Image (cartoon, rainbow, N blue to C red):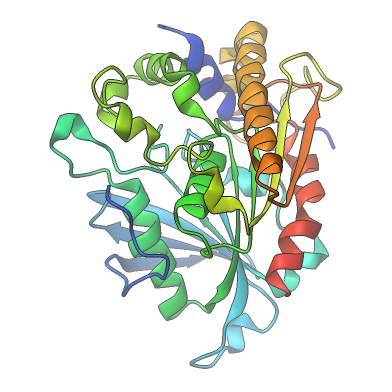
Length: 333
């Protein structure tokens, strides 16, 4: 497949330039509300959500299964949640990962929520003031309950995420054991407290106050640790995990031409630096190895794939397909 440098490459550039309380495992009644629905094709529906947790409107895309349009009250499907990377762009799952292609997903409801820029799937500390954006609360208390109340999402769930989305998926699974039967992370910061300067500098480059997200690591270390997947690896002992990351060296899918069919990819590709995407992926690869070793030491069911490649966004198509059998096994148990 001819792929492209996605918007994720800007986040990779940002990562090296410029140097809550625990929520219950079962979604409660939805706090957000859907204010618009738009059908994009026969399977794809896009929802506009008025989110109290984010203090703004957001978007959730649904890739619907067979029979979904004829659903009756009480009908549910196994549900795969796909969490966006640091750019927050949920459309990457369609444009780069091509999640609509695998026939195996025709009997699964796929939920793809957007996220605020550099949201890290966490409730921001906001220098001790709290408040929006509460991205973790948005997912657990708004997106998931809405899906289960109104759109046929069932209690059998799996999750996957790219980059910051991988951090989110693993963090939720580790802190809320049983929420997902399986979880996959692609090129993700799975132990970000090991490299706090990386993510603070990335936020600064994008014009985001990184200290508002997790706080100052010298003063708010416990906040940094709170949802770190490595720190809470014991919570993953009974969850099937797939970890994939490049090692930072150029691989067979790096340097591909931007895909003219994906809007904006030429712009994002032009912003990427080979050194930046290599260093970012090298760090993600190091953290992935660390988490993998920790999980193996705990006897947890983990599969790990470290490959030659950078943080260019071009490997997601392949890695999602590597992870699908594991995710589907959990969804069809």
